[in-house]
Picture 1 (tube, rainbow, N blue to C red):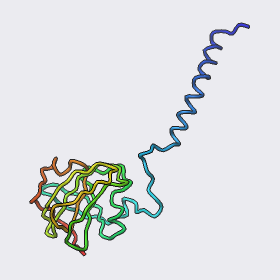
Picture 2 (picture 1 turned 120 degrees about the vertical axis):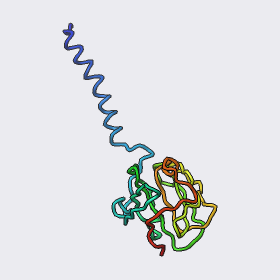
Picture 3 (picture 1 turned 30 degrees about the vertical axis):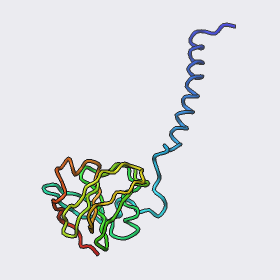
Picture 4 (picture 1 turned 135 degrees about the horizontal axis):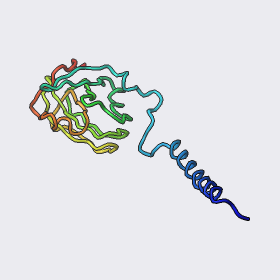
Length: 168
């Protein structure tokens, strides 16, 4: 039996296209292992109170985490931050407050501050790790920004962050 060349090409195209389409569909419905859904009950990024902070001439749009639940969630499950967006952690006591990056999908830099806004320590944190990041000094605030933000803006220990809300 003879098939015209056009018919053979059409059958070949269907034979190749169907498995490829099935693989593509399966890849679309299966979420990558590193992408995590926000769990039920987690606060959406826009639901955190906001504060406008300044570091020198730079204005920071900071979500504020000032209670245990908000501090515990922090920037977990976020996949992006705007260029001058971060999260400010406000604590009830002056102490060494340590951080880790469990369920945090983007690398971050963190600045630890005293009650007067003076930056005491800055650290770089890799995404999805459980290493402790602890300041060498006691403080009341911590500010997380995209990795490298502080160094790219020339922000160093000894400088002040302005516009901080009162510690509780």
